[in-house]
Image 1 (cartoon, rainbow, N blue to C red):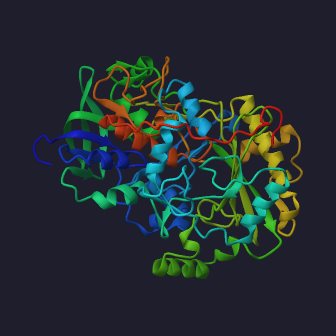
Image 2: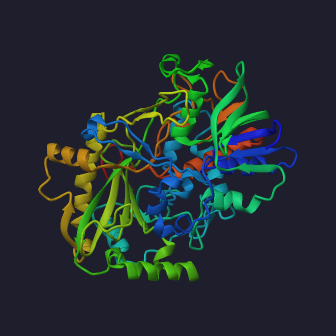
Image 3: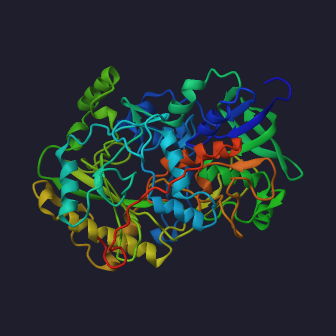
Length: 553
């Protein structure tokens, strides 16, 4: 960089949101857009190959490596919080699970003060994201940038056995959990394009990298936002061990994620006055909600031995992994082309819960996130989590130096309702696994063992065994009230020329993985910035169990 460069728009972070915002804003040839990414290239075989998802997630080169403070209600365990540090951000290291959330989740956003962010208004932007290869209805998109597929389309018989068992237990089947009816069990979808991970870098940036009005700066660490009084006017960054200042003519869009965005705001002097002073940071604007309202999904694995030798545990030897890799390299098909989460379920934990708050991912193997087998012999696992937590945590800067990781405290399971949700998850899952369709396959329960039965025993198991699903959100909450950070236009309260566009603005966490709603948010935010938001005419019909007030299913 020579001199003092300037652009109309500066986008900080190239992840699930930032890549989309940069792509959409640069469609206007009359404006200049700078996209800044702290990490490097995503052109890595382990990022591209869906079945290798555990490798980039656990590789420091592609991951910020955040960790939580000791979590009191998890027996003081320190939890991993991997966030993508690479082009595509966390969409380049995640599990590629494509779940929008329940329609009522977005109506809830509006009820919490995020005016206009109801399901009716969000649906056109979900559709704009998608190029769905499996479904075609009024609820799906078929011309978007992100390909949605079914992996190997449930070839393993365990997938359908799991779905059939749930139906035998009294639950419904859903043909499309992202459409009219989330509640129930059915095929799961993934953002995979012809056997390749469809990250936002792949889907949105690769096709447009030659645009003359788009500049992408990788391996560039934003150290702070520059302000002129209460107006954001530029950024300071480090690239190749040199410091630079870059200025914007119109706006700065902060898309660094639910950890990175509040952290950058805080080190730049925007946040709770007392906390900033404690960290030795000069206060630009007192905004107490920055870093508050942190939410996340927890989950654990039910693991069973399998009576039949049909699971992924039989594919973990070095020779078989090599065979899978070669087939994928040549054809982009086979086991290498799937994340293996091809069946799923969404249920309500109890009567009186209006829409699903428990999510299932079924995997025909007992395999850890790093790709190793959980135990010898054949097995399978059901990932289950209570997805509408009431616990809230925080992200807090402890230094004016952006390189010093913030203090992350999730406060997991701090409420009785969250703990009760996980007890229900254990008992309801056991009931499903005891159904006739699973009997040819279900062997001994590895975890939790059948000896774990009482509330106290389940609580202790959960405290020791539960893991993050890696879905942090909410730390720059959109809405109204004392802890809101951005308005419905995603503009930071009290600051001109600055918006936050990523999952940090979610008022409440959806019942599902966060990649899809984050991409939707970025699509809609881009239109808000352009002042051309789609105004749908009709309210889409969505499923509501008629007996939800009196029955769990």
